[in-house]
Image (cartoon, rainbow, N blue to C red; front, side, top):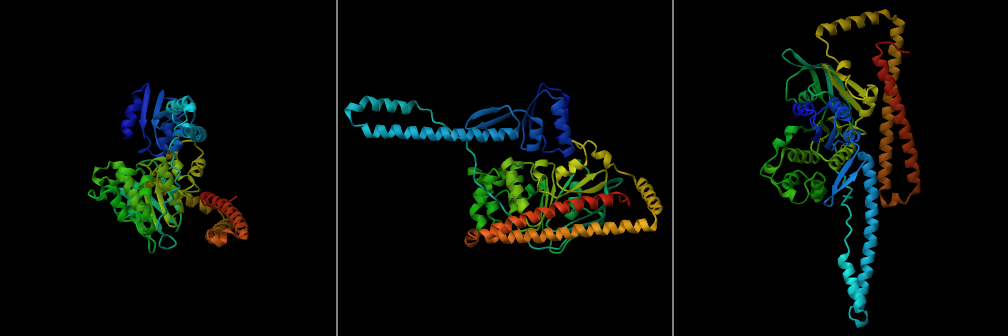
Length: 485
């Protein structure tokens, strides 16, 4: 797909028609394409569900609704606001028309059989016939919230990697991978295509051999979504039956709503799996995963075949998921507000960045990731050895007292981060307990609960802010090569 896109761009066409061009691109390529379309392309017609991409590239939005095309000469986010205003105007006009119709019909029914009013009645009947019904855009207002089943408690660290290395002959995909993911964390794997994100996932799943140590925590139950998951579905079952077989409890009453949220509404739910397209099968596999009881999610490009509403439903479900999640994705809008840690793959290395996806991009201090490869370029084993030797020399230059002071400050920062994490966990539990009480009929009428809830939320926000500052300080200290200010 990337080769086809490159061939297309090299033709320098007058008009580019791009249908979901970001589905097979990494973040670096997406941002390169954004820049190309903004600076080099002529006219561009774009079909995409990547909200960040279309906001950055387009300056005009065409909406097809009720058999008509509406032209907004603004970016997507501005279009969303204007569309809402237009729909409110439509609703007011529709309500006024319905009142007028009701008044006319009332007049007709009242004077239909009075000879003295025959002319007026006929006039009103013609008035009704000439009236053009005002249509209101169809907007799905159903607040569908899809929740994963409660996750079985597992060990504190569902995944720990120590010196993990993967090579195919002389080609080293990655080396010296050391990472640990805590229970409940939502993290992202990002980087250029081919840098080893999916390869590490396959190592975690035990699908391919590797060097080093990789340990899954106690009681870990993995839910894995990859593009080939769609091939494992039973082709003889219908879409509805596929989900009905995994749904349990009250969720079975909402199967039609869930299918509708993922573009399987109406007759589409009665199709057999074997007649579905690749994208439809991927969406079905995603729904199936959402209903399975797991406590560790690994999602490889989960949004490729989802529309914006489906992505929002999935994002909310993952955000509310009380287990751990690893998300391999290049969809910045999807990752924003969802992950708290980013693992950057590049040049055979895996680097950790605390914070969300936009925090990661900001830390890189670049608008695009064009420098990603440079900053994480692969070093040969000899170069690594030389670097380690240089680090040893630099370390030896520090006095014993300086090294001791450094270790003391580092331990203090680590302890501070752990204390804030414990405090945040306790505050979140307290907030959750209060919210459960507020959801009951008795609690809803208790004003003191709302006051306590507000106070706890403020404490939680303050603790999160302090934790972020401490985490940044710790990361900076670890990165400063044994030098603290």
